[in-house]
Image 1 (cartoon, rainbow, N blue to C red):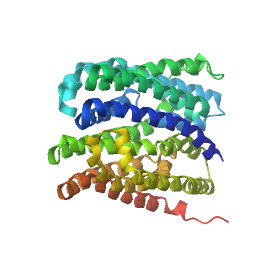
Image 2: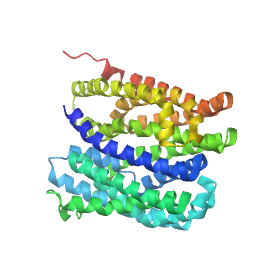
Image 3: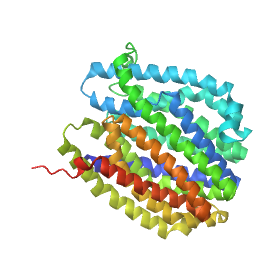
Image 4: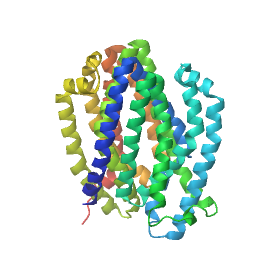
Length: 418
């Protein structure tokens, strides 16, 4: 089965990425403590917003249409050329904005001027991230899983090395610059590998700008922009809530918990993004879609459930391994976070249909509604339950999101085919 094959390659990416991320996080925790982990988490959220705007938020659109046009060379060339121009223009426009307004953005979004110079460096280097994202999206859409795996693996290793060196030398500031600089280095490696591919030709990137394709990509841009704003901003708001209501150490524990959660789920998320989006985009009938969704549930949900049980059972060991003894209070966050993770993955298997079938309005509405609900639930449960309330809010929000996905796609899921 292609899902299993893709998952194997995804596992290679994931193991290296998880190991790299956890080693980097361990270094950050040792040298900066819970407070430093919270600050770096905030900057990571800001970067994810900035980087989305830097390439016009077209990544998912490129994956979909690169898969759809796989056997149509002329359309491929128009897609790649138009995407290249969008990525280049957006990054050249957005980079100077970051440079000029770095101090203002640092104060406004992150309430601390410590990020000012790092934001300026991001502004200078953002074009490289933009083009790197485009090339990786093309590889994904073309189903070149081996090359995709190689590029992501090298990226993870480079990110780890840069982080270790800079954190050792410059502590918190080093971690900030590592987040910014690693993508620029990775772009050069990605470019070299892609240029050597059998299909590569400059003609794929030098065709005229195509307005029809640009309009198609715009729908995906809108969805990605909503997500890029909603998710990090909600985390910034909730992190500031924890700092205010609990402590900066409490915010650091939550950030640490999120790192653990994101790390072990990375295999599933990578499989979904590398397999499901292009696969669902290529399917035409409801019967094919239903079969693919059910296969996903049969393979993915048992793995997620097993992962949740193992992570919860080993939570004390994980905290000591990945962080320091000062993070032991993080243990209280595991149960509800893992419950939320399970429903999150159950919902995401269905929600990828919205991306694959360009259900723009439905995607945007659900994204906004459940982001606002997460923040509202966060305020409610943190006020009543303290630090643990943030993960209770997370679990309840994704349970409701899963139920909503079941309702939206009920006709497809429960339809009987002869």
